Image (cartoon, rainbow, N blue to C red; front, side, top):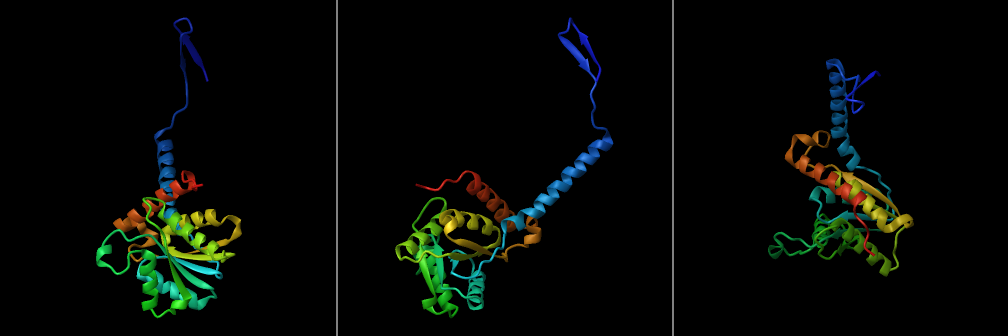
Length: 223
């Protein structure tokens, strides 16, 4: 690289390499490919499916009815000691509803589907303004610990893009004392392979990506 000093060494001129139009096209193409790969890879990353049958089967009470259909099938297909339904207080339409907590609503749904009530139990969590998934999972652990039933294995069932964050938070709660599996049930509101083509898909996937980033890097467990 050659230089030329001007004004008694206060300035200098340098020769440097820069991209040609072909180089710019190659860089743009690589960036575009990276973006396409990232967009297509976000949903499979969030909707992790890592089933570990056995122990307790856990389902989040806010999940739609077709998730509870999957719960009954999973319970019949594999050996579980019990099903636990977690949930937070319902904050919309509660005065019109018999059930005030998503956990109780989920348990009633399983009962209507014909599952024996001895097979499942609702574990309602208190109201919190944030960290609802964590609070629900922590409430379940506290209940099991009080009863001397801390499991060696849990299998959690939830909606697809919510799966990775749920598994990560539950693993933080139980540490190395329990194996935490996750079953990601595909959402019927959008096509997971083309989530960017619908507003429900964009809201769910991008919202869960931001929530995962928060839980992964910013969230700290209360003392």
